[in-house]
Image 1 (cartoon, rainbow, N blue to C red):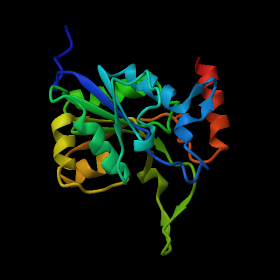
Image 2: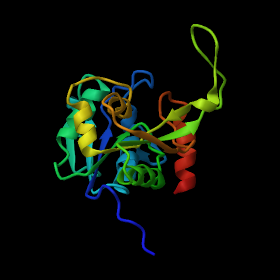
Image 3: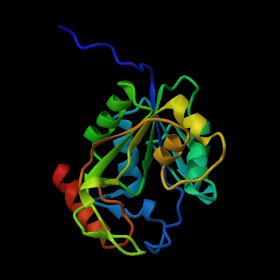
Image 4: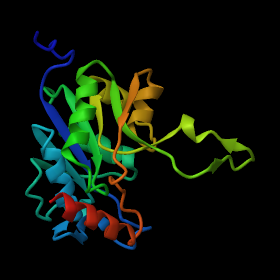
Length: 217
């Protein structure tokens, strides 16, 4: 018996967001070398494993920097959502699925890209990787949060292209694109994330990411 055809067929494009200034990191972390390669290059290569085309979003001042892993390079905006919209505008209309990935997560593996894309092809409007929260959580106003009911969300996040474009049409901002799609009435599913898929936020994070990348390589 053959597997059923996917609900959503067609090309996959990735938007790799590398437009931040790295204020908490102390500089433009996307260009820092980790395990012999720039952070952004690791992320572009990872996106390529699950996409037919890749758009990189960088600061306007960096448009001349070489990014051999990208099919198109565009300038980001004032916010993360603005930057995603800039990248989305460069994605061909023929794309069926769009994956949005933060360049600051260079350790994302091919299996994560495959998992989120498969969930969208199966019918979800959006799919995000999530990992269990290991710390105890409390509301600032008081009271404990049941950590079994929450997950820490990562990128890459995959979307039905039409749902993502519609969610961004109003020009709203959010911490991630799945939130915008959910606000617009879309269905978001969570797939198993990877604890090693660390987001580079502080310089100390680079060591953990480098260990994972060297081990995987």
